[in-house]
Amino acid sequence: MPARVRIVEVGPRDGLQNEPGTIDVATKLALIERLAGAGLAAIEAAAFVSPRWVPQMAGSGEVMRGIRRKPGVVYSALTPNMQGFGAALAAGCDEVAVFAAASETFSRKNINCSIAVSIDRFRPVVEAAREHGMRCRGYISCALGCPYEGAVDPQVVARLAAALYDMGCYEISLGDTIGVGTPSSTLRAFDACARVVPVDRLAGHFHDTWGMAIANIHAALGLGVGTYDASVGGLGGCPYSPGASGNVATENVVYLLHGLGIETGVDLDALVDCAAFICGALGRSPQSKVARARLAQRAREGGKS
Ligand code: HMG
Ligand code: MG
Figure 1 (cartoon, protein in one colour):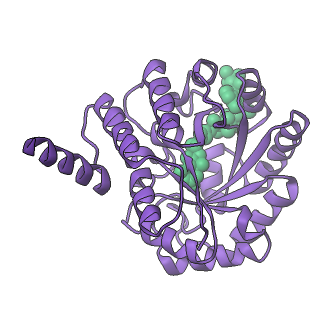
Figure 2 (cartoon, rainbow, N blue to C red; figure 1 turned 60 degrees about the vertical axis):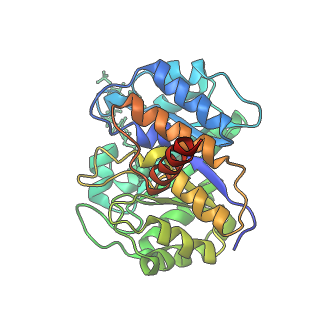
């Protein structure tokens, strides 16, 4: 298992893109700054996508420009095409990400084009990022299953991973978009990808719909995968993935990793405060096991004194 794991906090993007209400820029900024304060060094803060498709990500330029930067923290955003890349660049984004899918139907529903066309659209984005000294990440949605097509062949995922890596994406994040994966399907997909992309260039992005995300991370750790995406408070979902729930909660991941003696650089208590903050702003209490357990423990300890 890796001695240290890098967590990519996707709460401000994946977490908030599926919320029914609008979240104002000030709340997004407060969340992003608190997350950086808790020790998260990679924060996906925005998405330069069509506001007609994903209204929750409107104002991404304002968000990216408004962040009081903490030195050493990388603030990234989704950029599906050159229009998105131009907006991300103008807003001072540090790093960008393109997002493909291992299922044709999902690709069309999510980004309105086939997988092959998406690859052609990503190539100039990756090239432009390189010219501007920015890194570009590549996502693969539906890596463990598709809401429209069902099972996904790990070889299809691996071919796409190789295409994105060969194009110049520095890291390939395998997305279990609908959270149907199990440790065995996780191992099959990661194993296939690790044959064509160095394992230290792979990342896991698990949604927790069926409650397997932590088990899947544990399985991927065993293969040496050292980067995981997670969302504070377990917020999230994808608007084009009906029924999918949020990402694995960052606090659950941090608790697992620290319990395994793996360093993350994240302060669990400060992270639980972030979960309480954003869930409070959304009018609910944190649902993740770790946030609830820690908040209950604090309440008991407070009751004693
Ligand atoms: P399109 O309609 O095919 O684009 O959308 P188009 O090039 O034909 O342009 C149509 C209109 O969109 C034009 O505006 C463009 O200006 C505008 P109009 O002239 O009609 O007023 N447009 C844009 N506006 C802002 N930013 C842009 C942009 N591009 C075009 N970048 C597009 C194609 C990809 C833009 C659209 O389908 C889209 O925005 N889709 C949203 C995708 C999305 O954000 N999905 C959720 C995130 S992915 C995810 O959650 C999965 C992940 O978490 C991993 C996992 O869990 O699996 C990453
Ligand atoms: Mg996602």
